[in-house]
Image (cartoon, rainbow, N blue to C red):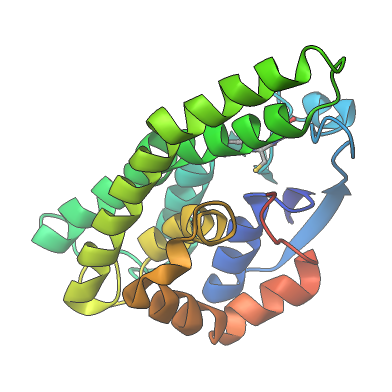
Length: 222
Ligand SMILES: N[C@@H](CCC(=O)N[C@@H](CS)C(=O)NCC(=O)O)C(=O)O
């Protein structure tokens, strides 16, 4: 039986959703973030040395990295579904968005989370204005302009067909759902109608709703 090592409010929700789309049976082992540090508990390191979610075990395979896991699941269980035909222009877009999600979209979103926490972190009163100034300068000078650039671009791309890789729903849409849901919470990405419409369409999918019911609340951290 395939097992998903699932951390609350995390990227592992994407994997549950993909498995529901594929109709593959799976077990869930649940882990809770430390409420202060937000880190995964050390038990997850027993499954994979980095101790980050998601991790999937399938028979003798232990897999990490959301994009690599999604590609594995679609190749192993998809029977041609959820991926464009190899060699097609849609396949190139598919591969691009599979990498873009974690390689380009997530770094400024993570910086936004960290800068927000620095600004709110307890500090001696004489240090507070300094830490707040560092955090707000980082946000205003780099993070916010980068996020506006990325979400403006994503919104334009979604205007073509409403999906990321051609006119059909694919695993690239599953992979992109996490930066988009995080972007709405952290970066006001919901101002773009094409992004709102994408979210409405994915949230209406029965498989998305089944994954939510099994995985629990996955509202991205803010
Ligand atoms: N690029 C990795 C990122 C994995 C990652 O950072 N996961 C977060 C959850 S969203 C995590 O495990 N955070 C807790 C920790 O770092 O201890 C992927 O896509 O799987």
